Length: 116
Image 1 (cartoon, rainbow, N blue to C red):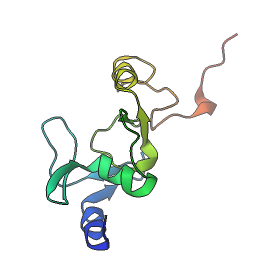
Image 2 (image 1 turned 60 degrees about the vertical axis):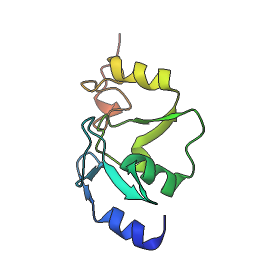
Image 3 (image 1 turned 90 degrees about the vertical axis):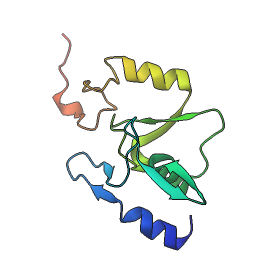
Image 4 (image 1 turned 45 degrees about the vertical axis):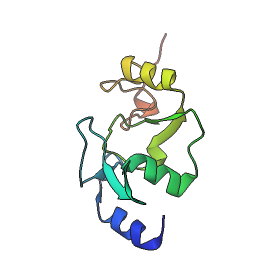
C-alpha cells in the first residue's frame, strides 16, 4: 500500500482503548466487515491491514478475528487459520462471540477460576 493509501486507510480507523480494536468507521458490508477501495477494487479492511503490517496472507487461509469483532482491523487481533478452524472457532464457546476464553479481547488469566 502506498503512503497516500495508507493515510486514507488510517483516517477510517478509530482506536477502542478498552479492547485495542482498530474499529473501521467507513463502509461496512452486510456481513459486518469493513470495505476499503485499493488498487481499483473493494477489499476487506482487515485483510488490507494484515497484509500491510504482517505480509501476505498464506494461500488457502482465512483471517480469524481473535477479538470476535468483524469491524476490527488491528493486525494483532488477526490470525491466519484454515476455513474449518475459523468456522469452528466462531461456533464454539471457547472462541465464540460470547466467550471469555484466552483469545477474547477481555481475557485476563488472573481471573481464571482454579480447578480443585
